[in-house]
Image (cartoon, rainbow, N blue to C red):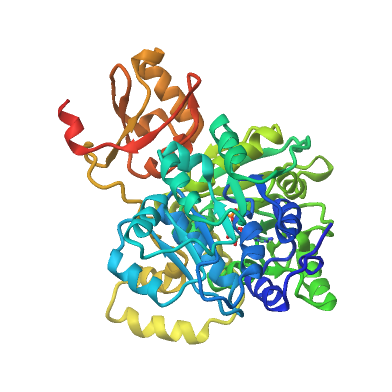
Amino acid sequence: MAGFSDFALHKTIQQAIHDMGFEEPSPIQEQCIPKILEGVDLVGQAQTGTGKTAAFGLPLIEKVTGQNAVQAIVLTPTRELAIQVSGELMKIAKYKRVRTLPIYGGQSIGHQIRALKQGVHVVIGTPGRVLDHLRRKTLRLDQVRMLVLDEADEMLDMGFQEDIESIIKETSSERQTLLFSATMPQEILRLSRKYMNAPETVAISRKEVTAPTIEQVYYKVFERSKLESLCRILDSEEIDLGIVFCRTKRGVDELTEALQERGYMANGLHGDLSQAQRDKVMQSFRDATIELLVATDVAARGIDVGNVSHVVNYDIPQDPESYVHRIGRTGRAGRKGIAMTLITPREMKQLRTIEKISKSAIESRTVPSIEEVMERQQTIWREQLIALVEGDSDMTPFMEVVRQLKEEYPLEKISAAALSIAFSSSISPGEEEVYDFGETGASNGMVRFFINIGRSVEIKPPDLIKEITELVGISGKSIGRIDIFENFSFVEVAKESAPFVYEALRHSRMKGKRINIEPAKPRAKRQ
Ligand code: AMP
């Protein structure tokens, strides 16, 4: 298997990769990077979560020269993706003088014009706004040597085809063109034939992998409150030994520290540790002085511990094969094991791919509520207190405080206050993600979506409910009012499920038709 050092990437970029905490190339990177460096046009079938951004981002930044002109442009379907890609490119370019700029609708055009005037090497933009700049002549693409169409299928579904073609025509015909797409419908192939030069195709391996027969579940979580969700899940489980997988070395360090701060017996394992450090961590895991081992895929590869009760994918694996490797660490020697995967809305699709290729049935579970966690915690607190009360540890200084206080306050209240000092840090309400769908005309606590299918494909409310509950892993109770018209429908779903419904349904198929889902406009309610 290739390592990053096998690629012809400058040492400034190698250093940036190291800082980002990547240990080894993901499968899609392994295939794409050498080809892109060679200069060929490439069609990559990959979705979010596979490492596709760095797959084109690393060679893209490598190829940027000192010339003061826009040398590369990345087109993305949404502003969120533009910002995300731009962030990743900036990290890759940490030690190289490359100016990147995301340009998208919704942000002041004046601000973008000023930034463009200062000289930019790489533009990451949504098609509409890029075209707007081209028309105003505030952006020139005649020096562009690399064009990337990211999430091309989504861009076409959003009706950007003409815009994209107009933009392509502004670039030099000498350019290298890269196209990434999760699916490869006819229109994508047509686009690639028309604008690409003998493109090579790269896809993640669809090699059959068989998942072990252990219980597999997933939890829908939000990026911002992922840590809180993990803690709630851990607190509601009986864990003997657990391995928690993170994508990067950095991720391992950060999560280990956060878990330790919260009082979990956790330690981290990754490729930057010395052999002695690794041995020490592994020994403490084997004799159960720690209960959670936080690790990257690479670090966990050599581990052979028999009684792992839980495998937790804190970050979703980059491909089905790695999913199967990870979860195979539990359920050994006939013991019971469970594999848990945390999924953010944008990763719903990657989960479905993993499920399909590994032929696994991964069941949806809900992150325990704070009340549920509290209930469980109470049992634990009680047990700890009883052990202390019945034990013989020296509590003299604490006794003294109690003696003084009990003159003035009831003992019950003093004890509760003491418990709260001891344990309140282990419970926190967590943050909610801001997935803002705006005003959709829905009832309270719900979001109303427009979906482009209706009676004409013989869809009825129970079909819609079935499709949504199965695809998104939510209960029928999270679905509210449904209105079906001839060619479209409106569905209300509970606010907390809305981001998952949106991301899972976008560009999926129902009754053979490609789904377009959008937040409803409030006036649609009166129809
Ligand atoms: P993407 O599929 O491009 O959206 O990437 C998903 C996440 O994986 C991002 O947070 C990347 O920074 C991260 N990532 C990309 N390549 C690697 C790698 N080789 N090792 C670890 N993490 C990676």
